[in-house]
Amino acid sequence: MQNNVLILDFGSQYTQLIARRVRELNIFCEIKPYNKPPEDLSGYKAVILSGSPHSVRAEDAPHPDLSGIRGKKPLLGVCYGAQYLAHFNGGSVEKSNTREYGRAKLAQIYESSPFLKDINEGSQVWMSHADTIKKLPENAVLLASTDDVENAAFRFKGEETYGIQFHPEVYHSTDGKKILENFLVHIAGVEQTWTPDAFVETTVAELKEKIGDDKVILGLSGGVDSSVAAVLLHKAIGKHLHCIFVNNGLLRKNEFENVLKQYEGMGLNVKGVDASARFLDELEGESDPETKRKIIGRVFVEVFDDESHKVENAKWLAQGTIYPDVIESVSATGGPSATIKSHHNVGGLPDFMKLKVVEPLKMLFKDEVRRVGKSMGLDPNLLGRHPFPGPGLAIRILGDITREKVAILQEVDHIFIQGLKDWGLYDDVWQAGAMLLPVNSVGVMGDERTYEKCVALRAVESTDGMTADWVNLPYEFLQKTSNDIINKVPGVNRVVYDISSKPPATIEWE
View 1: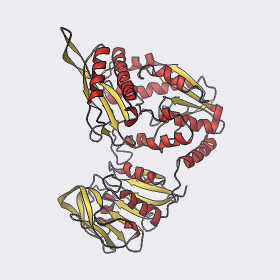
View 2: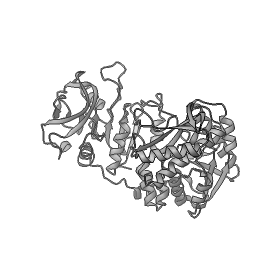
View 3: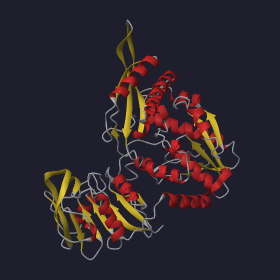
View 4: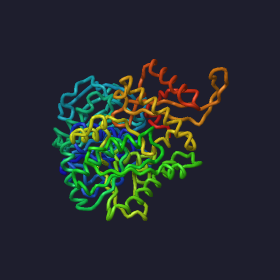
């Protein structure tokens, strides 16, 4: 592919958003750690340097070798990337005297440049930095300023290298997407060919070549990711795909039976495996969130190893891993981004399992997965399903897991989700669920004092799960849902609603 864009990640929490905005332009891009760039750059038509929590003035500042990029490919530095280009090329970067964080406006645009084509003075941008570029390198030309940031945008003479101290990828930068389009399409000449249909065509061809006549085992969950992965693989290898849906005992109420019924008529070879007792026994007495995830991941792999022996000559294990899973699981030793949480479906397999891994969706964001599914004609109801975590209710039961707690939370979750559907609210929510808290509270039922469980309801709106805001559900709905839960679920006497956004909170509680 000759139309790729490379994003070098210096550790900014906004790096993923750069990729999202580029993808929205129908341009394929990849994120790589700044200290582990691809050896072969021939397939990339442009490079973007991300922001960073680091300062270019620090001794341990990220300092990559850009000799293979600078002056040879169009290059855009964002925030830290811009300061890096200025600082290490004769400019001056100092600690800012004023707080340069939040909304600002481009007060002056000095040069008629294709980079800022159709961007007007007064355009709102988003700042987020403690350092500022005080002096540009001698061979740099100032393009734009804000009231507080003189060197907000600049370019280098004689090359397609640009720097901006604001974040075009953040929604608050109203013309940010246009600036990225100017750089990538009009300056770098990148073709806008990244479409769902093109992805399907390319991926099916790659899967055919990669897998050949080998047999593949795929773990279905009933969710969007694994379903789209299954249909992609089925298009590529047909009967050689063997789908397995594992009941880990941590699914929603009646999920095991409903999911198996859902796949009837899709032409997929699906087998249901009830391993709930095995998972719950392994989880007994464990309260640590990361340990719970790792136990579930290990048992999940063990179950698949058992099942793989029943499929003669199976060579591959397919997974519905998507790009945010990969990004959030990068460790500090593997790249600059900090690990937020581990993902049970990301990473290598143990030595005893002889299957190779294939992940056809690992470069897609969630909304892109849905668009790919739509282009292949999947049921809109399936594509519209809320995301559900791989570890299931294990990370919605805070503390240790028991069969009784699972049963309680399944009932609570069922009332909440069914209520959203009945009230016509389900499609307005990105993800919803209930959390069983490790606290009891005093209540009164009838004339008796109770000391029972508290549950928290969570509903968020988002595009891809990287950021999320809580949904302002109607009071009447919350009132009825709370009453239904307390009246119908033994062991629960208090319901609360989570009004935290991501960041700083995450969507799940563990």
